[in-house]
Image (cartoon, rainbow, N blue to C red; front, top):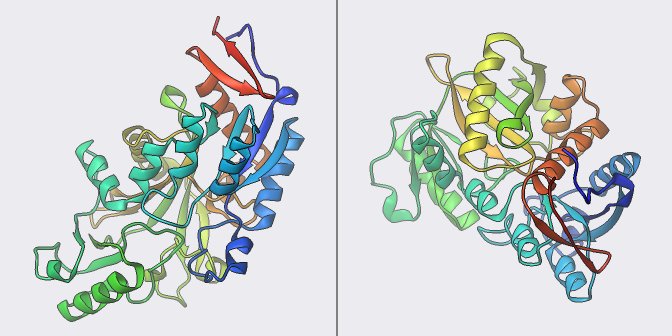
Length: 353
């Protein structure tokens, strides 16, 4: 498709929004508080890939920095957003919502999807309503909920709005009422949010990488997470801080890859996710995959994040992955409707042919 105005890579100014872990650590936040935030090398890797593809970039930083720059008149053709945020249940939605308000297009999912998928229980309800299998679950919002009905043991417990292994450890797999009460009390106090209580799935664990939107969404690879026999599986592949000591990753092909890929694409569509991300699942006791969670803001460290590892296993290097993400975003943004963007502090309208 040809457009009267179509941005070439060397014409586009890409803003980079991110939460730098070292900045928050210097302010006194803990290693666990900042577990989901990014290393400097992650930003450098993304920037290097974008430069090699011909894009101009400008580092913006976190949501507060974005707001200040916008108020001072700065604009970008597109924002590559990987801001996780650190406060509240809408933290991943903040930057997308700001950019929406200023009518600046951005890469990855919108504010509504980010809010939905951050809350694992709400996301599971949407997925379940779409007819997609997911483990039975309940929420413990307070101590008053401890005596309410719940799925049968064994259970898996974790905070409902955390990632990167936060709140997950040897205590997470629950077999008794005493363990259930003790762990719920601990998680409620430590994380000040509801506890997600799920039926524990005993089977193999997979993560699926997706790129694209609508009918163009495609699976870029399926990866199995195989736990080291020297450690307990309950650490979960989410725990990335010491993953090389805990798990091995294996490329998955054939019938199992097809089953996992189909489920992932169904989840992608049901949640309104965009451009690229990752869907996690496990096999139930019948050997069928069930949805665990989706990460529409998947980690992009070129060395040790799951999505780049998965892409690499399937013949896609990091620059090619970033290019695929950018092409998906550009097609979505520039592909079918009339838009208006701010470019170099001037306003341009463009129309599809």
